[in-house]
Length: 285
Length: 276
Image 1: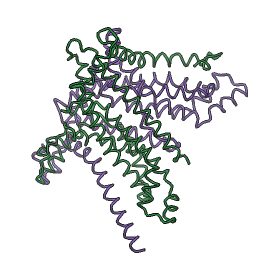
Image 2: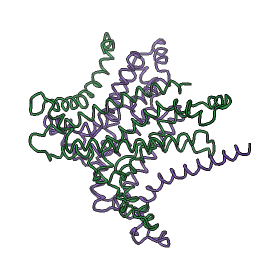
Image 3: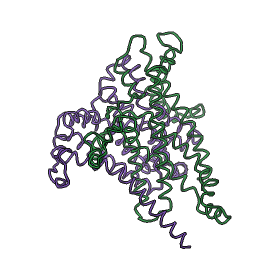
Image 4: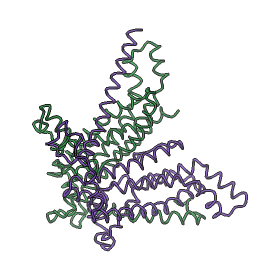
């Protein structure tokens, strides 16, 4: 920042509002959360932080982690398969542009309309539920419901698959056709090519993409809230604590939970950046 | 050769089947939603013969004439406009000065503008409740108090778009050329740089609109009345109207986003949906 400001009135004029804005609305509230999480009841201590990882709050983190992991791995696998499946396809001509635009749109479609759409599809009165029941299969008999674990995974895939597709398309296009041909000419079988060339090259981007999807699901609140999810997950616990349903002496619990979430996000996003930097090495043409 | 051709055909069939399966996963919820919103036949009574009966837009009409929905829509429109203005007022000068005068600082500024993505709404809302609720309750009382926070979450993609736009027009060269020929600083900005940034600004405005019209978590936890939160309230009393409205907003948002993606692709920019 020093160089920015030295003899640079213009720099000062643009930097001050920007810093004040971020400082007041982002940094200040975040630091207050961190401070309160580390000083439960006014004295420095880790009791709130440990409390946030025990009992029902612990199971919230575990449920959230499983939900995010399941939707990230399944969504990641399908998104990657989709990117690979359409890679060499030139017909129909509208396929690529449509898929790209649709993915950009659908990856942002979390929230209220998405929850409503799935209530109309796999809710108790939903279209797919009804179709399955006509075929003599009642999803409820298998313990499947829209507000349960697999119901949420099924809904989350709606924004996870397109996000993975968007993340993976550059990496998949970076796999050059000449490498495959070279491997085959040198006598490799398609399986060998994938095992020792294709997959290792895609691995960093794939792992990075899955982590990104994990973060995406971990912080998703709207869909689960509108679906009235019966699963005890972190975003819904934060709502519970915010609405003032707090036992005395646990006021700093919400702050501690959020601190853990931000630590988790920072670590994951750092890992994503490292993996993407590695993945870029091969996509740069 | 024939076995290879057969294998290729099999792989094509497999691919087509996979794509159809994926397409139906994405189409079915939208169709089910549209049916529920616009066909006045309960699911329990729906038979193949009744598939074409009872269609009407009455649900959407009720929703669009509901006073609560109308006032929430007005609130959301105000938030959209103010967030766009706030974001551009802060970021356009920052992006220009960084690019033409201090390009070495670009990585730091870019990193700073990505910060809002590390603190998602569900996390920041706790901080806001712990600070502004006590220090400035008058501020949080207004629905418009959402504006700075929405501007914050729009910041990462807005800055990237502005920065990409500036680099695409070689802003630094243009700036130096114009200055070298004797143009004053305000003249360069108003006549050279700003007109060339119009499409970046329009794209970021469209993305901000989509963000504000879709944000539920933050507004709902701060008990604000915006279009998404009122939509949920409305749906509880009138499911059909609520779904019709949600579909309407969804299609509107999708069209905006789709247009932006297409326009950006034509200019050789890629859409970064993710934060990193």
